Amino acid sequence: MKRMGIGLQMYTLRDVTATDFEGTLRKVAAMGYEGVEFAGYGGIEAESLRDLLQELKLTAIGSHISLQALDTNLENEIAFLKTIGANYAICPWLPLEERDSESWRGHLVKFEQFGKRFREEGITFAYHNHDFEFEVEIDGEIVFDALYARIAPEHLQVEMDIGWVQYSGKDPLAYIKKYTDRLPLLHLKDFRAGEKGKGIDTVELGRGDLPLVPIIGAASEANVEWLIVEQDTCANPPLESVAESMEWLKNNYLNQF
Image (tube, rainbow, N blue to C red):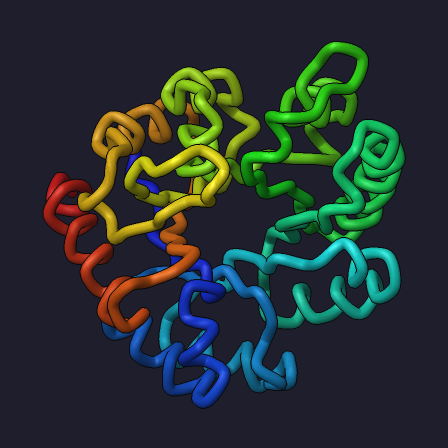
């Protein structure tokens, strides 16, 4: 099995970073996480964040950037990513009013334009799914697949949230295999099945329903670069949750290397 990096999506710790962004990053590094994916920078200047990451030996994997920021602040977002040494820019979510078929046709055009601009600066653009991409079609094809069928790989890569894939009723192993060599980032998420339509009850790795060990094996076969832990909501204090997920990874994945 190929050794993939272990990262954390900092959105998981949003309540903690709201009061102590730097201190939270230090705790994440001490847990053994090797990289972080941002969803905001806590008001820290790019140069200061770069220096802090270097001190902590944390890789800046990339950042979740809202559609609004991509539309209105693209050049500043590019400059920040380049300063901190991040290789990925990811659109993480779309507002409810932007999810119908006609809106998606416009997004396809925009995403290609964003991808071209990021590529010019040596940054890879990707899209992170939830469940709604499996519920809308464009010309008979579900949006998740239409995105990647209609936009060239050099302009759009996959950041697959495997928890949402399974929640949507799709086979996570089949979807990982389908996007081999176009899936550099995999959000590793566990959840317990609940009533459809009530959202996703995310839990620490190993406490839910996903076949995580086979998923990690499939990710390695698909040439995933980073396994990124993300927990949308935490029943326990968030730092405890991400520490527990890291321990699960140490015991069920990292111990092989």
